[in-house]
Length: 234
Image (tube, rainbow, N blue to C red; front, side):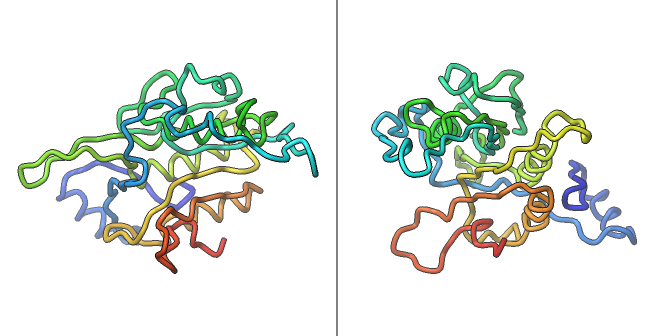
């Protein structure tokens, strides 16, 4: 993960200790599965997120912006292959722990987000195109004899998706990075991850001319609790 001067690895405890002792290793961090509580819906289609009830107002008035010529990145739970907006995807990649070869969204949130951007009926920028990275997944964990199903993403896989956004075709000579990347998710305080964990990656985006957009969160009535990375000065 050159974007953060790091490496993601799966290894045994004794090797972790060896790596930590190397003089050119600054620190060794756990790679936590970060839960997105607000995305934990059993709904699997974009319509379940009330897309049909949205009526964009004034899209054709004022500046008449429709996204023409703009590519938007979306890092989320993927995109349903039968979604009307699937045809507007220029590049797609699955970064989950069990990647699917085809476009997919088993949660529905990513499909809803992408539709809000480019759908012909409800999208705010229907002439734009998409670059989609799937990182959010549903996994089952066992703890104290109980099984829990969580919706979230591994921190390293988020960084890998952010890095991929800078060159979706893998060719550094081509300019195919999206001009803006939408991340409709974020985290409150987390004991396993520093708030500044994604700061270096976002700085790389900005150096490349990519505008980062992150969700502040939906916790009403709680002041001063904007999620990170949305609370970064950047």
